[in-house]
Length: 315
Ligand SMILES: *[C@@H]1O[C@H](CO)[C@@H](O)[C@H](O)[C@H]1NC(C)=O
Ligand SMILES: *[C@@H]1O[C@H](CO)[C@@H](O)[C@H](O)[C@H]1NC(C)=O
Ligand SMILES: *[C@@H]1O[C@H](CO)[C@@H](O)[C@H](O)[C@H]1NC(C)=O
Image 1 (tube, rainbow, N blue to C red):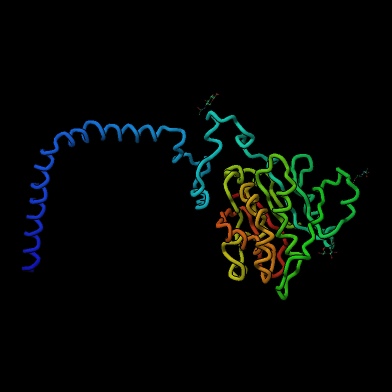
Image 2 (image 1 turned 45 degrees about the vertical axis):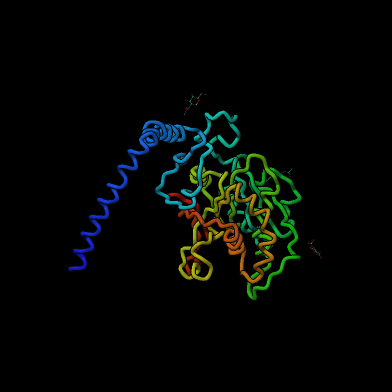
């Protein structure tokens, strides 16, 4: 106690002494003090104001997206093309709102199950309005017929993946070609592509909901949007940070470009993974892009034999 009181006294003295020592110093350099007060400070204030109104300072240009979806990745992504339409730069294609035509679908399918699975796709595919392809291991009838009235997406045959290692004991090598669908779709170079949306052949999309969701994100930023499984066990086995392809997931053009650049090397680095989604996830980890969760991407993983439908339905 005593020591404490003494300390306080000493401290008080020290403060006074400090102030007393400062005042004469300031008087001595009166000119410098005036300079600081009447010149430097106003200039500094002006600078701050100028910076705040400058078009280069876009600290508050958050997209119109409601924060309700709480996407950390989104908050981290700066800028939004939509807020800069009146800038001196000419309006680019990127300024228009995202529509169905900006999405490139990539449907993972197999020639073996094609005859039954194509009927799932027919339920939601709009041939006149949508772009994308079904990616198969080998050609099927529709691949040759080139008949536009099939009501189905065009068919592409996945690239040869024999050169990639696959060491998982129980999985299938088809994971290798399926995981490359986003990269292969990107390399098609379709004009105006903003989003690459992956789904399985039994994934059912609600196109308008999908557009509604994606239009809230900036495709010029790297986004990996999807959702984990509804099965805790599945998420433990794979990851809560992984998008399950059965529920579909979306990759922005900016991210697809990065992925296409590194994915083959990435596949080489993880030969022991099981499937295609975890291979995408591995590349996302290397690229430093976390999953942006949206509940609309929904993989139905009820254990037992539930109807294998996966739906993009927004509440
Ligand atoms: C952008 O410019 C257009 C005309 O070029 C104008 O009508 C509009 O109000 C402007 N928007 C903003 C946010 O200044
Ligand atoms: C295209 O397919 C439709 C229905 O599947 C069929 O009626 C039509 O004859 C086909 N056209 C050609 C050119 O094969
Ligand atoms: C894939 O490539 C390997 C060699 O890398 C070749 O032996 C094989 O025939 C190819 N498969 C197809 C379907 O082209």
